[in-house]
Length: 158
Image (cartoon, rainbow, N blue to C red):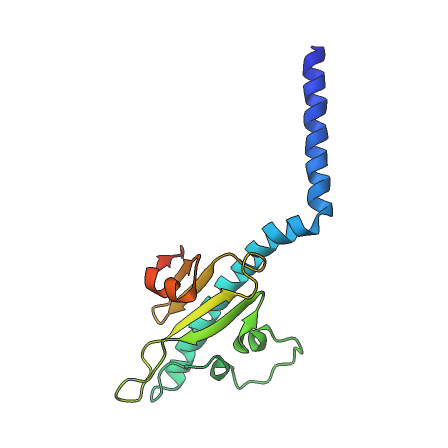
């Protein structure tokens, strides 16, 4: 019976030690939880960009999709001085750099295809994976580069 008490006390000690290290180690928290938060924000941002692209194309049938992120900005005035959409459309948000790629008008002058990439600004710290999307609205990821993301098309679950 005494042996079980010793093992129980050791187990409790290591659980408490791990919890203390987790709480007081910002690099551990940033490294493992910050990356997930940033990657989640990047995916949500790509979904927002897809919605804005669809809205833009509906409002501009003679032009199609926008080939520049700032064009997706709404004309309505915002009261909030910290506008996350403005930051996103400026090209950088939550540790990722966003860019429109593979976007050009067809012979009629209408843009029918676009791609958007989200690349970590500091790979390994702000994000591990590269994310991308296109006019289909589907999201993809790759662990190497933006060009590989579009080519390999590893899909994210909806």
